[in-house]
Length: 136
Image 1 (cartoon, rainbow, N blue to C red):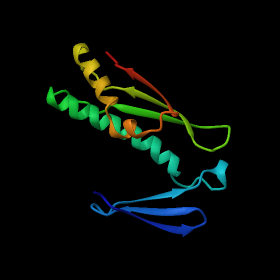
Image 2: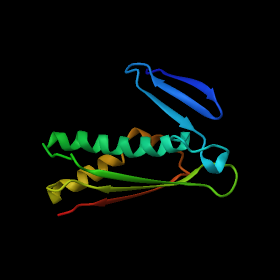
Image 3: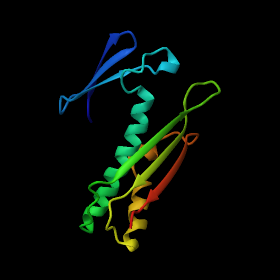
Image 4: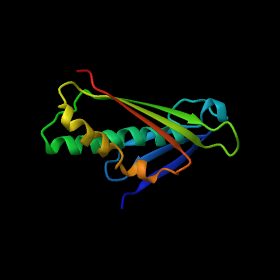
């Protein structure tokens, strides 16, 4: 169990504090939904959670084989629905992996991404597109 404490600061802004570490993040409603877009929106955090969770689980799998993923980049695109109700319709996750990953280990890492708890928690109506690029 982990607690997150959220304070609504007004004007569609929130501050969320992770109780164990005391680190905080701010949120704002997006410009296209009455906000000023001055911070991550709640749905931006879902997209961010997916990308960071996937690379973290991949790194756990890589660690078993002493494969280094440092420098790997993850780009996430969040697409909102155009029809009501407002929701995340699609997430595109693009991985550009660090050089030097043996070709025979790549499928293991890609499978690991699919086991991420955030990915497993997403509603099945959310389309998720994944791509993996290896520079060598």
